[in-house]
Image (cartoon, rainbow, N blue to C red; front, top):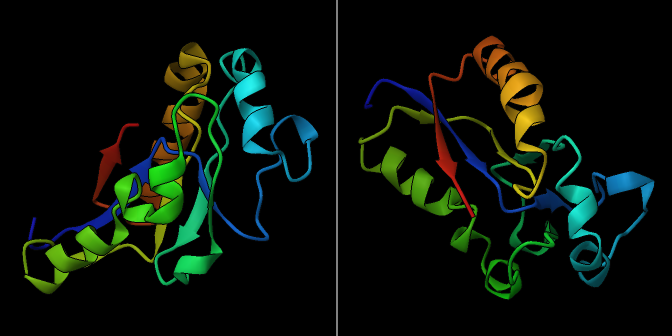
Amino acid sequence: MSDLNVAVLSSSGHFVSGDDPTPFGVESMTQQTAVERIDDFLKEAPTLSRIPTDTPREAYRVRHGGYDIRGASVDHNVALPIDAARKLVDDGRVGSLHPNAFSFVGACSQLRMINDTGPAWADAFTREEIDAVVLVPV
C-alpha cells in the first residue's frame, strides 16, 4: 500500500457546491425531494461526482434519499473520509492520495452498476493511474 496511488469512492451522494449532478434534470434538488424520489433513484444508473481532495469544507454538499444525511452534512468524513485517507499518506501507509475523491448515490440500479457504470468507472480510474480505490459504502 505504501507505493500505491489511492482514491476514495463513496456511495454517500456527496458533490461540490456548484457542481450538482442534477438528478433527473432537477436543478438544486432538495434532500426531501431525494427521499420522495428514492424509487426513481433505484431505477437509474448512478452519476459519479468528482470531488477535489482540497475542496474547502464549506463547499461540500450531500444529497441521498436512502439514509439520514445529517452526520455527513456536518462532517463529510463520516461518509467521505478524505481527511483519514490523507493521514494514511502522511503516516506513510499509503503512497499517495489521488487529487480527486469520487461519490455517487448508492441507491441506484444495481444491474446498471454491475454491467455498465462500474466497468466504465474502473476503466476511467485505470486511465487516471489510480492503483487502488477505497470504497466507502453507505
